[in-house]
Length: 65
Image (cartoon, rainbow, N blue to C red; front, side, top):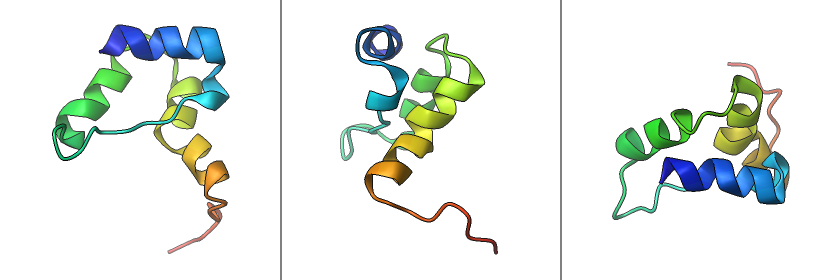
């Protein structure tokens, strides 16, 4: 639920929330829009949809193609 995403960021902080599709029951094509309509601005969305996971998994986000 998109309202729970906003609630989680309010209670825990944006740096403690990461995107999860709920796969195999939820497809990213339907789940990502729920995150985007949660009412959060672009910066918190970028953390939830990628930056937090990149930090947890220590991914190099500076790679260039």
